[in-house]
Image (cartoon, rainbow, N blue to C red):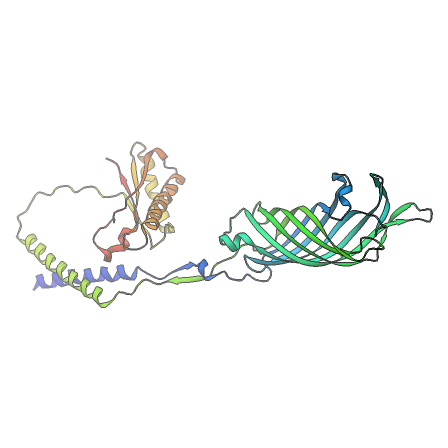
Length: 403
């Protein structure tokens, strides 16, 4: 009667352990970039930029000027917002000075220039404009979003409206400053921003831009379109939250089918039969001299599936282990990381083993243990090695004293 009760207790214990191992495979929640990215609040991902540079204006006679005399200053300030890792808008104010040559006077005339017996009219205009640009982050579009990326290539296109100021002259024909011109005009622009992130909030950039100006280049010529190439160096400050998060999705463990349950039941019956045999052998064997068993590990730290995080309780355990190690400075110890081979890929499991072992090492070193006492390694076998139902016992790090 006692033998039957003992066998029943052993069988119940075995089934309980199997159920605990199965329940350990809980649902895990992770970010999934393949599902896109969540939209941040309206107050996030705003930025302000300030820039300055030079421009090179193309007109039919500008090639007659000296090369360095064809450059003029330009500057701008922008406020913008990214609505996703790829799409954004910016609006700003821009200043561009245009210098050119003509043969029939010019809007913004301020003198004459003679070369090869040909006289040209020099003109110069200060254009102050309001701009609106649509932006696309090519790097995030083609290579996928990555928060820590240093370089991003951003293309943009936009439209604007310019107000014109030209040189003014007094009654004696002497220049005395600038006055309001009468040829305000629509403009267009396309460009490439080479953006270099210095940290989470500050970025340095090089903006290469082509501007289209529709204006009157002289008092007798009709309105024409001209291209102005511009280059800016700028600094951007990003406000509030600057990163993007992927949607959180659950990873649900596979539900076992009836065949698997039946196989587990058969395995359990086989184990019960084996336990019965062991019990009979134990009751019938003669008394033997006890041989000292191999000394077990000093400490074993267990983890949940896919995790290498050390809990608050385990930190206290490792603090006590550190005290033992520091009291025996000549004793060396092996820190060995394990992962179960029933879930995950080999690459993921190898990364988990190393992360778990290195995490325990960091805690021991932080607690004052000498690095020369530690031998950190991993083992790609299952620690418990008794089957898939004990998979929770295989996610661990052991600390053993070396002989």
